[in-house]
Image (tube, rainbow, N blue to C red; front, side, top):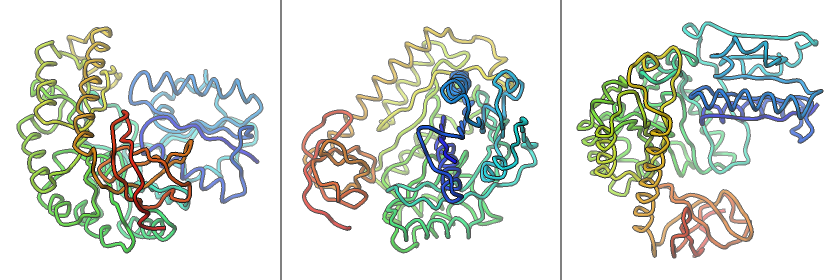
Length: 424
C-alpha cells in the first residue's frame, strides 16, 4: 500500500512524522503522490493553526476520496468535538503515533478514535532509522509544566516526560554512524530534560563525547534553564554550535508578568551577556509574541527597545492568538487584529535588519558549512552558527563539511565560493 504524510507545526511534529514515515517504510508501505493512506499531523498552537489543520484535512479528503484518512496530533487532541464533522477514519491524539501500523491494520471500515488522559501519559519512545539527511533530530522530551498564560500546549501535550538517557545516546550514536554530521535535540520543553537525577547538562556532556559527532544543536531552550552547569558544557565543548534559540516572547516586564513567564528583562539580558562572554560569536535567535492582551503602544515600544539592546540575530514573530482554556483568553484589553498585523510587520522588518547586520560580520570570511540541498548548480546549507550559505559546487559535496569563502549578501543567503572539501 502507498501513503502520504502532511505535517503542520513544530519540530517535534516534524520528528514524529519522520518516525511514522520510517515505520511505514520498514513495514512494506511506499510513499506516493497517489496514496492509499493519508496521514495529517495537526497543530493547535494558534487559531490559524487549527484552521489550517481543518482545511488540510478537508482538502486531502477531497483530493483522495478513496484513501484512508488518519489525523493525529495536537489539534485532534484539543478539538475532539470537531471530529464528527471532519469525518476522519482514524483519529489519534498525542500518543500512539509509533503504533500507526497497528491502527491501519485494525481499521475495517469503522471509525477509530484513541485518546488518553494527558496528565497520565508516559513518554512514548520513538527512534529514527532514516539516514538520508545531514541534520538529524532526536526528540528527548515531551510535555510542558510552565503554563504560560497564552499557551494551549500543556493541555494537549501533557506534563513533562522524557526519553531514557541510554536510548538518547544509542539513537545519536546510530545516526552518526550512518552519516549524520549534526544532531538537534528537540522537545516541547527541551531544557527541562531529566532521567531521574540525570539532567540536561549531563545529557549534553555525554553527547559531546559520542565519536564522530561534528555538531550538537539545541532546538530551543528557555533562558531559565541555562544554568551554570549547562553553560559550563557549552563553554568547554565546541561540538555545541554557536547558535541558540532562546524565546523572549516579550521585551516588557509588564507583559512578561501577565504572560506568566519565569524571568524579567533584566534577568534575560544578563543571561545573554553571560552566554556571549563564553561564546562571543554566538548567534542568538528568539520568539516574540505581539498583541498580547494589555500590550499598549508604550509597552510594545519597550519590546522593540529590548530587542535592539540584546541584538538578536533573528526574530520569529507571532501575533497573539486567543486560545480558549488558557488564562489569557479571559483577560481584558484584547488587542485589535489590525494593530497586531502592524506590530508583526514592524518586528519582521527589524528582524531582517538584525539578520543582515549579523551576516555583514561574516562577509569575506573563511568558514565551514554543510550543504543540505543542491539546486541549479548551487550548494545550499548552514554554518554551525546558522548562516544560510549558497555556493556553486558539485552535488557530490552534499552532506559533507566544506570550507568556503563568503563573498556578499544576497538575502537570505551569504553567497560564497567553495575553497576545499574537508570530509567525504
